[in-house]
Image (cartoon, rainbow, N blue to C red; front, side, top):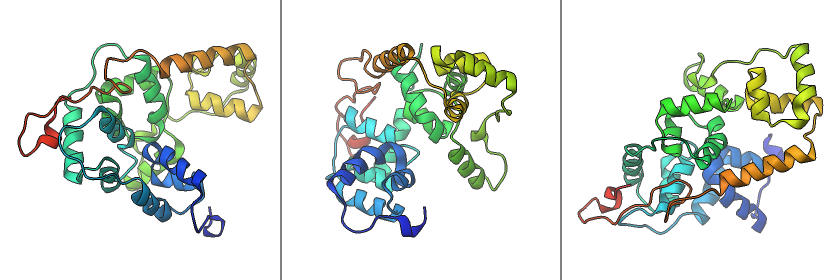
Length: 263
């Protein structure tokens, strides 16, 4: 977007609400695009209205969730301001959380979280966002037919000096006439993950092609998908747990109490 098309001046109440909702998970650049503000304006306003008073002591489950949601899309200075901790404390807490990954079968909430974050985070950042080892994240992403967003992959290539980035993953070949015909045949009555597995494509590739072709889901499958999404979002949680985050135990004392609470 050109500078001429950007909003300037006072922020509306609606913009401030969207800023609070978008920033922790989308980051400064994406939030700026969605709000039609400059990235600098978004950063300044976030520092102004989202900064919390300095905190000490044990980290709460809610603080851990903010940390994990924003990891990989916010710089550490802004993230530290959102949780009221120092940059050093944020880094130490992140390192501590990485030492306690989940084990066993993936929950519906973990799968939902991976679907939400996979396209815009590196696998290493997802290790903290999801609290699973990178190898498990890669395997689950393959099972769910997920892919990195094109903008994220392009950015990763630039950071790598123009070469192929690991974040790219396998590139999808062009759709054949037979694949398009099959997509038209099954799209209305099947969810995109089923279709992606059947065609050997990513969910994003299926969704984009269906949108290009003007295909629609049937009311029945939309209702089924809606119920499945609600179930994965609001599934059972452990007492005191926030979206898969283990609550911190009270710190035992000492100079590093604020980062020493166990997960």
